Every structure is written in C-alpha cells, then in structure tokens.
Length: 174
Length: 174
DNA sequence: ACGGATGCTGCGAAATCCGCACGCTCCGCG
DNA sequence: CGCGGAGCGTGCGGATTTCGCAGCATCCGT
Image 1 (cartoon, each protein chain N blue to C red):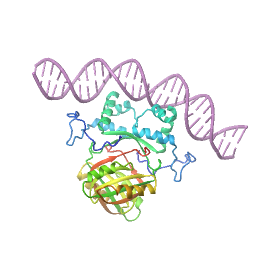
Image 2 (cartoon, rainbow over the protein chains, first blue to last red):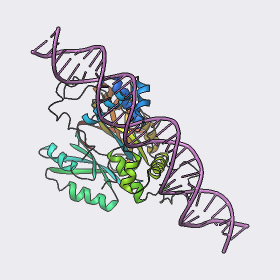
Image 3 (cartoon, each protein chain N blue to C red):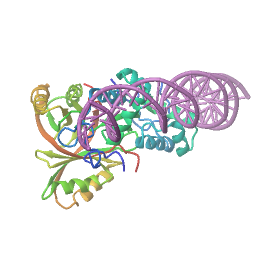
C-alpha cells in the first residue's frame, strides 16, 4: 500500500494549478528539483543540509521540496535489495497476450504479490510482467496456475532469469 | 558508479567466514536483518531508533546492521522516480538474440547509459534489456544504431511501453 | 491595490546520528 | 582448560540533523 506510485497521478482535486503541468497532469520539475533527485539517487539518506549546499538552497527549502516530491508521488525513497540475497531464487519476465480488455488483465496481474512489475506494451506481447518467486515450484504455480487463470489471458511466454547484469535507478543523472 | 550492485558479490577476500554464506557467496540474512530491510522498504529515511523499536534492537545495533548491508551490497537506499516525470518519455523492453558469447554482449549493453536493466534469460531471447529514452528519435537511435551495432547481436525485438501499471520494491515483505 | 497562494530563509528546540568504550558469547588453538 | 580474537549488542555523551514556525518576498487573479 505504498510504492505503486505509477498511474495514480493527480488524484487530488486541489493540486490544480500547482506547478504548471505538462499535458497529462504530470507535474513539471525545474532544474533544482532534478538536482535534488540526483542527490537522493546517489544516497537516499543524505542530509538536507548537504543537499542544500550542493544545489544552492537552504536546508528548510530542500526539506519542503523533498516532502512535496514524495507527496506528489514523483519519487520514493526506499531500500532496494538484490532478490537473490533475500531468498527469492527464481525470477522471470513473462510476455502475455490478451483477448478483450488489456487494462483489466493488467490490473488483475498487478494485484498479485509475485508480480513486481507490470507494463502494457506495443509489439508481439500486450503485457510484460516481471515475476519474483522463491523457487521453481512457486514460479510454476504463478505462471501456469495463476496468470493463465486470469480471464482474458490468451497465452504467455516465459523468460527465466539466468543472471541479472545491471539494475540502475539513475534516471535524470545523465 | 554506484547502484550496479548486482553480480559483484564477494569481491573482497576478507569476507571469508563472514556470516555463513549459502552456496554462491551470497551472505546469509537472518530474520532481524530481513525485518530491518522491510522497514526501510516502506520508508528509506526511517530513523534507526524507530526501526530498532520495530525489530527489537537498539538504535546503534540497527545502525551497524544497516551499514553492513549497505557495504555488502545487499541493499541500497535510493530515490526512485517515475521516468515520465523526470523527462524520459519513451521506454521499451528489448529482447535480444546473440551469437557467440552472451555475457560479453550483456556487458556491452550494460555499459550504455540508456540501458537501465540488463538480464540474461532462458527462452526465445538470450537477453532482455530495458531502455529509457527521452523521445522517439532517441529510442530509435539506441535500438537500431547502438544495440544492433554490438558485435554478437543477431537480432532484436522491441516492446515499446504504453503504460506502466505497477512497480514495486517490496521483496521480502510478503 | 489588495488578498491569497507559493516558496525561501533563519532560528531555536527536539530528535537523530555517530563514534566509542564496554560487555557478552562463540570458537580456534596452544 | 584458559587465553585471545572476532562478531555482535548496549549505553552514553556530543555533534549534527530534523522539524515546526514566524517572517518576508514574489507572483498572480480580481
């Protein structure tokens, strides 16, 4: 009940003329906020004063900006772990083809704990879903029993992870 | 130069008899460390004292454990953003087929800034790569010019993101 | 010109972080 | 068996950070 911050933007009626929104209700970010985000992408626990020094703002101003970014759902500050280390030994990307309403299938899959990532795509799959499981049995059950049981799922194709080579969270740091 | 903590486990010769490792040099995590990680997955800036109260440890002990988890690369505490909000409007998952050494291709792709996620897989693709770009031109260039130019890449198939429905970092919180 | 909203600053109080000394337990070893 | 070191936890001050708030400047819309 947290950290599924995507696709739930601007549900609040009073963020109306907030900071001029570009098209789809996505809040506009100025260069300073971007710089703050970069700082927190390097270290999510960096003190506000240090960030302020780096971006040229007072401690209090940084604090208020960060709080707003958090409230708006623009960013989250979280611990990210290596799944293998915390006991999830099988992961897979699953491509899904759907008949009927794609979005309702996506919602159903998003409701499953084992689905860590759900995205609607253009191409030979309608949906791509990342699955995190404890072992092979678990993975098998999720793919063959649970995902295929969702109404509207026509077919699936699985790509079991052999080795994770890179995982970054440095958008905006380019 | 940070946060690519995967596949670089136990490079240190002196973490020998650390906390008994299970098979591949992956450090073992006890229930308390798991609980600490859960706390930080909910809020990466939660005070050590509050975590200590939740898991039954002193503030100092939590602090030392967190520091160790960070040092070992078991977890990172970072800001995670919605790519759309920070100005990256095109994303895609790209399946890659390789001839020759898969890992060297994976390394080459991992070296590209636009590749946010690189994983070796079993299935009809050898590699799956997530790409984050600013616009269509950028995406086109990355896929058709850069990725296909990597020696060993036989073919690619792209899945352009239409809508991100779920993105979680709650492993271990089940 | 006037409210009202927004955003930044400065400041004191409270809470947190940090280093360090100390104690405990668990081995390995002479 | 006793010693010593490593690993891990606690408690404790002092430095640092967080937090709430008042004050001020700017930018609108009316």
